[in-house]
Amino acid sequence: MGTQDTAQPVSGNTKDVGAQFIAPLRVNDIGNVRGRNELRPYIWLCIVVMFLLMACTTSSSMPTSTKTKQSISTNNGTITYSASPQDVLIRTFYGGGKLGTLEFSPEISIYGDGSYILGPGLQMHEGQLNSAALQQLLHTLVDTDGLLKLSRQQFYDIPDQNATQLQLTLNGTHYTYLYGAFGNLQESAQDIDGYRRLGMALTSIRDALNGSTHAYASQNMILLVRQDFSPDLAQNIPYWAFQDFRLGDVAIYECGVTPQDINGPNADSGCLTYTSPRNVIGLSTQQLQAITALMHDQHQGVFLEGGIYYSVALRPLLPDELLQMRVAMLGSGELSYTGIPLHEGPVPTPAPTPRGG
Image (tube, rainbow, N blue to C red; front, side, top):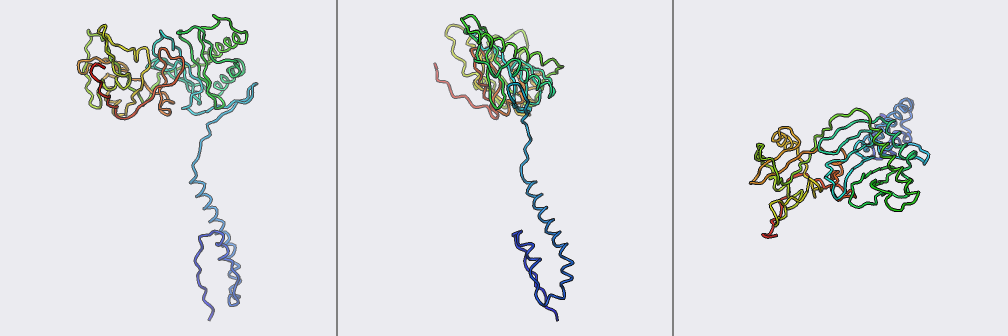
């Protein structure tokens, strides 16, 4: 009788897999050599297939990343930029002076994929630059206008006046330029030339956005509420019939407690008219649907709650704002941009105000 082979357990170590199949033959197995030799090619094939399957499993479990960086060559070297539709490459505001009004949105926002959104205001418009047009604009800003080589970034010598603020993100660096009244003092020839170049750059940006646009819409909206001290009482002003939160709480969270006016009946602080809010409230889908119905699909309205009138406005979020959790607005007296914190979820309950405080 021939010796019966005993099956050996397969080791978890892949290095041992082949060894179990090609172990030295015993003397009693000589009669089976031919059969085993015929099986060896198939055994090796199985081993190769096992390794391929392991490699595929490993590679499929690794996270994949989408390349969003683009680069272009200029006379000033290679510049890189993000091609993400949520990353702002170019943004402009106009305002910031003491007598300025609130910019509810930027004048221009150009994103990495070439999409652009035009404001300012609650209702914006959007258009699209193709890749070649976007790169040509960046090339012009860097080479022709020489933005990255300016000796200074702020050209503004008359306090309290409005100015244009330009934000530019290239090579992983964020640049901010200020273009206002300039040249009233003794300025160097280099600074005068820099001022001229910055003006050229702003013109280049505006001229590049010459395509067709359409109304900008977003599924994500913010609610802006302020106390209204001069409503049009000739109009029918509805009551605020929404149970999720009180307008008074939203107004306090966004603009602060209305100060006492000891000299008259008007205690308007100017928030959401001239100055930026402290915070803004983001709406859920259900809240947005209900409030849109209350406002009859309008972006602005006036409501009555607890004997107080409130001005209510809806503004769509820009693609970068939800990601950054900051809203792009610029108010009076703001010549440096910080953005407004975006809050989602229940409206924080305001702290009680001490009597006489």
